[in-house]
Length: 311
Image (cartoon, rainbow, N blue to C red; front, side, top):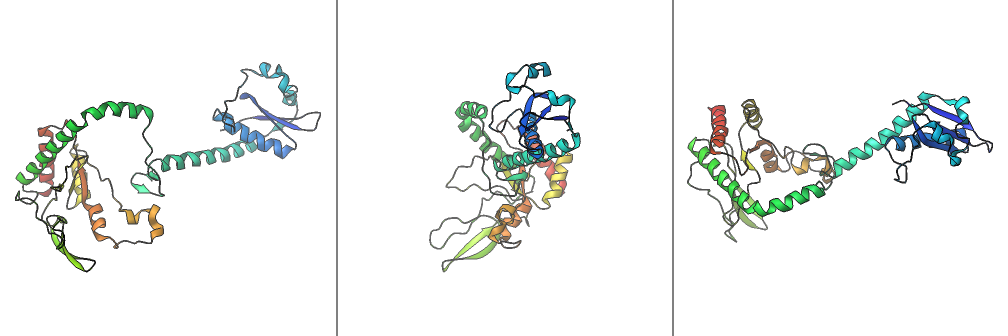
């Protein structure tokens, strides 16, 4: 934006600058360049409603108020004298505003995992997005969380039934898994068998595969799932998502880029192909609508739309 600035010289040979748009924004400098620099900075903070020290600037409402302020005696004399060209101030204030804009951009990025574009992390940040009002609301909602989580589990079971009934996923015979020869603990479920070396002990891991259809979420029998998301792995995932969108059905790809390929972790030196399972998962995962109030007919609509896509 453009602002007119007026320049004057007092009896002590100091320069003063003021702005008609902001009567209380007056600066002084020992030289013309110093005055211009301070004026540009003062204007930048005045536009933002703050001074450098963070205090609000008390701006007189009119130039008459300014003239009557003993602390600024003679500050208006420049009005009939020298004028600072608008262009100089505009250039300076634009540069200052761009600095403020960059600070704002980076602060917003750091509070959201270093993201400037959703799910693309330029630097390592934090998850700092819970304000006081949200915390107050959530403190009440926590009372209902166990009930809502159970409703989510019920909705997930219903999705499983619908997918199997539509012939989109392997049969309901239950997940098969390989086990560590040392512990007998399940490694993974339905899909391709791989041999993984583990400190000299061979482990057979069954890796999920979309070659036989849609891969449904797996619940470890030793755990209880809350189904914050119901995430399937689907062949031709991106085309399927476009199909769902065309039918008014929401879906989301929450992690399109695996960690080792994020810009924030590029200093680790990994490249495409270093973690093939993670990369394949990132290309296949698709979150479907799930929430406690989701109706059975809505779930049927979702699964039917997916069935018609693969028909």
